[in-house]
Length: 107
Image (cartoon, rainbow, N blue to C red; front, side, top):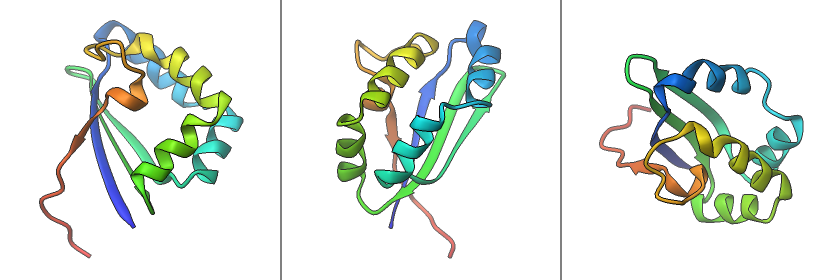
């Protein structure tokens, strides 16, 4: 199982709304994530500066991303979430996150 950790930057003025949106993620989006191999998915927000850290486990990041790419609900969710982030350089949030290197893991 591949462990994936990533970082994005939420706009400070949009942090509260970002949290609200994630309190009720669309059921179709949740199903799509589960069905395409995104497991133990969590997001952590530093409200002091908008740093968002995400973590999930997947058999294959490449396959998980490719699976979501085929889902219409993902395109809608990414378009809805894109305004919340800075520095995406025209990419969708699921394409523009910075994947962090794992340097230690305690089983």
